[in-house]
Length: 177
Figure 1 (cartoon, one colour):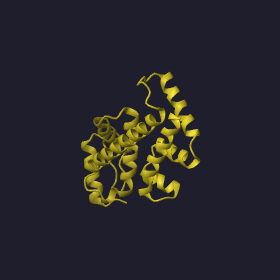
Figure 2 (spheres, helix red, strand yellow):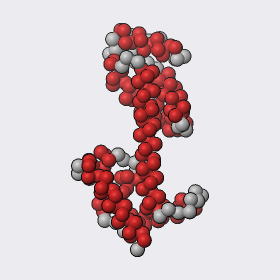
Figure 3 (tube, one colour):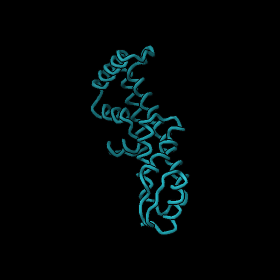
Figure 4 (tube, rainbow, N blue to C red):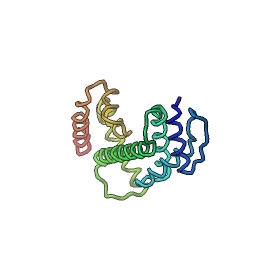
């Protein structure tokens, strides 16, 4: 339950955002107001509508458990959306880097046929790797963090980076040979 003062702060903040939330102290704010604020923040960062919706849902889900301890919900949500957005961008860049290395740096053609051919090349290369290397690169391509990969592979987090580099080097050798 929210304290009366925190509930009043959050209610006044939501009302200034056009949400019209008029609840009793201790009630949760309307999802639509929080979502709208987060979607707008994500779109200002450059997310498309679908990614902005995902970021908004994740940010609000992170807000609800700590709502009673957050002094300024607007600033808190903006910071969480920003951090989630940049994490998403880093994961996409890492996934694209690994994918391009596995696909063998094709001509830059982004047509569906070229993407399909590149996907076949990646599948062919992954099939020629050891099960452990294949699993590692599949986790990287799926966008998992080094921490997640370390848990799945039951190894230390500092071992993940070198293992990825070795798996990519092996994949490049197999692709060339």
